[in-house]
Amino acid sequence: MAEQSWGNLLRIGVFYDGQYFRAVSNYYHYVHDRKARISLSGLHEFIKAQVSNETGRDARLCQIIDAHYFSGRFSAKQSGERNDLYNDRVFDDILMYQNIVTHYMPFRTDKNGRVQEKGIDVWLALEAYELAIYKRFDIIVLIACDGDYVPLVRKLNTVGCQVMLLSWDFEYTDHYGKQRETRTSQSLLEEVSFPIAMHERIDSRTSKNDQVIDNLFVPPKETRAADTARFSSTALEEPALSEDAEQSEILKLKGGFGFIKNSSTNNVFFYHDVLEGIDFNDLEAGMPVLYTKEKQEDGSYVATKVRVLDQ
Picture 1 (cartoon, helix red, strand yellow):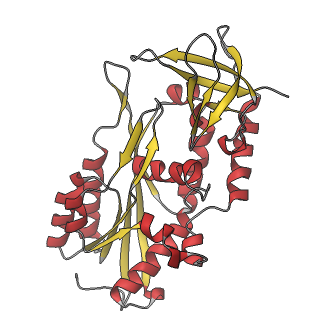
Picture 2 (tube, helix red, strand yellow; picture 1 turned 90 degrees about the vertical axis):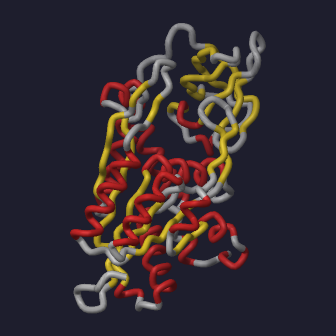
Picture 3 (cartoon, one colour; picture 1 turned 135 degrees about the vertical axis):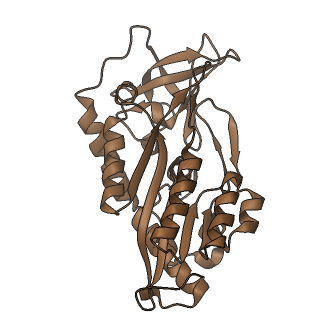
């Protein structure tokens, strides 16, 4: 480990792969039994406690002196079309209050219209390595799962900076109703000094009623209050659904997605982020909805906007 400065203070740098962290937070909010988002303040407290446990250093001397969040981002026009502007600003405020520096690159769209994130992992690696040298981190905490970060870990080791990896393995359904699986790269797990399987820590029976684990999640009341504020602020600005909108009812709900009853086609799939005016966790089967849909390459239909009608 690098020679420490500032007496016995152990200097920690935290680096977020933003898209990965968002997927993790969505998983716990919409799919997992916790039904709550990851708390950044609680996560940072967990990191300091974990570093203290791994190094034997007093927790008061384990301090996060730098934190950085890297992610792709839609343009203002695209975010406006998706009704995401307010949501993006709220998250920026959360990052700001936690002293997390943001690094954004524009999302790119391929010829098939699919959104792609390019270059974020390279940017994160370059910044992490440079800051490890200039700020003399003792430990860098990496919140990621991709094997592309293995070269970064090796380079950090050469300058005496150890790496702690916080990772989650889970399954989820994407925007198109396809089953996806997130698994941490085995080579990355083997390369870091301190691999922490967060999904195991959270679901372990020994973690039941553990305050440090419970603090990893935003209290449901706060999450719901934030969602209510978001929906209220956008309600007056919401454009009317297009003339081809259809009316039906929610047929079935699962973890973060559901199906709308449709007699003329197969039931229409919808994902939590196309809802307008309501949080997914407040939905119930049988609720009447107004929705627009688009046809996918395989002939199935996916809802692009869903609004619950007053009952």
